[in-house]
Amino acid sequence: MRRRCDDPLPLATGARAPFPGVPMSEALSDPIFAVLLDSPPPPVDTAAAEALLRELWGIEGRAESLACERDANFRVTTDAGPGYVLKVANPAEARATTAFQVEALRWLEGRTPALPVPRMVATRTGDFLAPLTLDDGRNSTVRLLSWVPGTPVARTGGAGRLAAQIGTLAAQLGAGLAGFRHPASGHEILWDIRHLPRLMPLLASLPAGALRDQLQAEIDHFAAAVAPRLPALRWQVVHNDLNHHNIVIDPQAPERIAGVLDFGDMVRTPRAVDVAVAASYLTHLEDDPLAPVARMVTAYAAVTPLDAAEVELLRDLIVARLVASITITEWRAARYPENAEYILRNNRGARAGMAGFAALPREVVTAALRTAAEEGVR
Image (cartoon, rainbow, N blue to C red; front, side, top):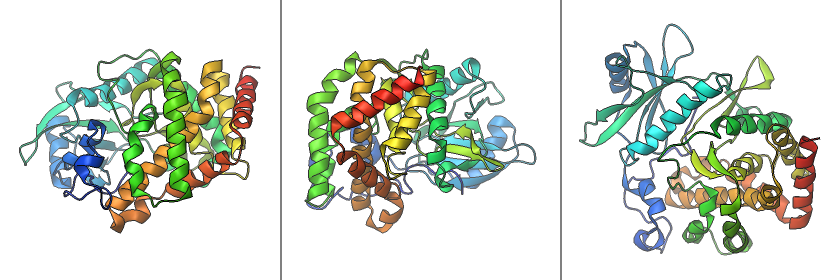
């Protein structure tokens, strides 16, 4: 299976406390966690997915279930073309949020048609988002996207060589979304790192020790020195999840990025957050953690120059994403120990990246990133 969501299991199953000794009601009272815990995925199987395809789109195809933490997603293959992705939304997701994702992809198709992103496919009645009543009585929506062919960069081991391309792609995608507006763009999601201080309750899922202390120190620093400066940055809708599972290459031309997947974490947030997210997945790839990050930042700045305020916070935003990755996955692994190996698949890289950055003085990292950004505009 090529495309996966972030977690193999629904976070809503059962009422298990997220970590031993901490009642769920006390640890996770923040509403930002609610949608992850309270709503199981839609009960839709492959036969039902194929029936929806016939009824709403007039398409005969074969559906294959894709693992996903909250939604019911299916790869659809047909006798012609690369196929589709059918997505049945979690009923807990506000319809406005789903519509936001739909409209963003339609915006990109109209404004930047050359970008290799999924395309929305209209139903026979011309709708891009159709209401759906599930067998359990809950209300949901269903939509169809084009399948983006390719091999995830995470499977190739070549992400470091693609660092500059990732920077260019991130900037082009950001530029394409820059003018997009939607009422639901400011929705709150756990993976928007401007909310990092709200992850503090999850640290209880880690054993006491140096790592937990380091994570807490970075969260404290973010709350005191970074969060107050975020409102002054340039804000826009961003992809917010350019990890190496969401970037695919052409198997026949592995040196070329062929597409971007998974727009489910899109949000309006500081533009520099998107740069930091993409950079965070490069930090563990080479002996010098700054080298691939610098290549990415230079390429990004060549398309979209970064201003001084963004560069000054970039180191802390990169580390914030690493902190979030470690903290959230450790929490999920404690909640589902039988699936810890899969849930923690990116955890080792995040730990290595954080260790590499922690070994360097903050001012040294910022100076290197400033130089990289300046190189991009020369």
